[in-house]
Length: 135
Image: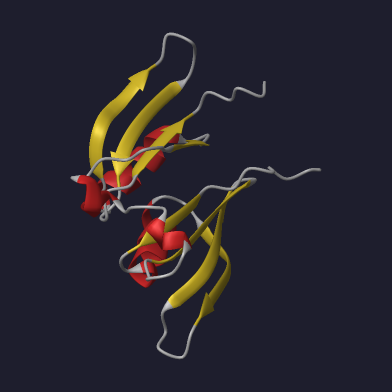
């Protein structure tokens, strides 16, 4: 298999806005987006590098009974993703200018590389770095 077999999934209160923001500010691109007749995102696949996330609108179904969005748990996250980026300074600047809340500033890591962490407009935690654990 040449693609990752682990794909994080997330629910957003406004998935259309999330897709737009994630693509403009964090470097994702749309792979596939499926909407219903009300333009509500039922399922979306966004890619960054060789990784993918799947997102959808927070709705009342069986799956959504099992998960919470950050606004439902005082802004906390129970997991977060780490994304490898080569041009970290440019990425950091674009995210910050796009309205990301920087929660851990861009820094050199003891184990190698640079990294930073931010939250998107709905409070999801994202970690970016140049360190590639596969190398």
